[in-house]
Image (cartoon, rainbow, N blue to C red; front, side, top):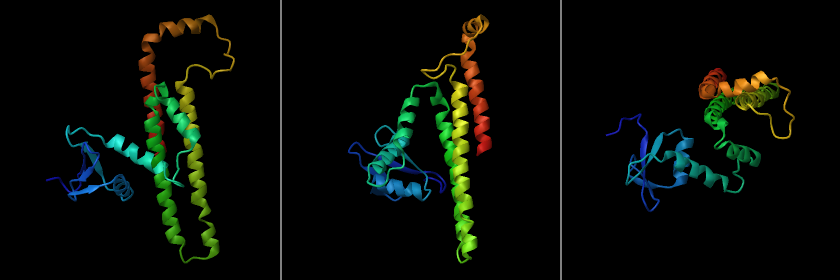
Length: 202
C-alpha cells in the first residue's frame, strides 16, 4: 500500500481512460487539472507497460485548457519562441529557467494573497497598498526576462542574423578551432553558472 505522502498513481489504458488508483474511480483530464490546482501529487502510468507518462498527459491538459474559450494563458509570441528553442543550445537551460520563474512567481502570488487577506476590513488607504505586490510581480517578471536575455547572450556565440559581425583579429579565429574540443565543457560551465544565478532568484 502506498504511503500517505506518495504520489497518487493514475493508470492510463489503451482506450485512453484514466483510472485513479487512490479513489478506485475513472477520472478525466479535467479531474486531473483540478487535482493539480489542489496541490495533489500524482503520476500517470501506462497501464500496460508501467511507463511514466505524466509529462505528455500534463501537456495534453494544457492543450485542452488552451483550446477553451477565454482560457488562453500562453501568448503566441511565447509559443513561437518556445518552439524555436527546441533543438537549440538554449533548450538545455529553458526548463530550469521556466521552473525557477514559476517558483518565484508563486512566492510573489502567495505574498499578494496574504496581503489581500490582511487588507480585508481595512480602510481604503490600506487597500491602496495592494498595488505594491502587483508592482512586485511586474518587477519580478522584468528581472526574469533580463536574466533570460543575458543567458541567451551567454549561450549564443554568433550575432543575430542581419547584424554586422565585429572586427576580430586572426588570433580569436584560431582560438575557436583550437578550443573546439572544449566547447562542451565550456557550455557545461556556463550552464552551472546560470543555474547558480537562477537559484539566487528563487
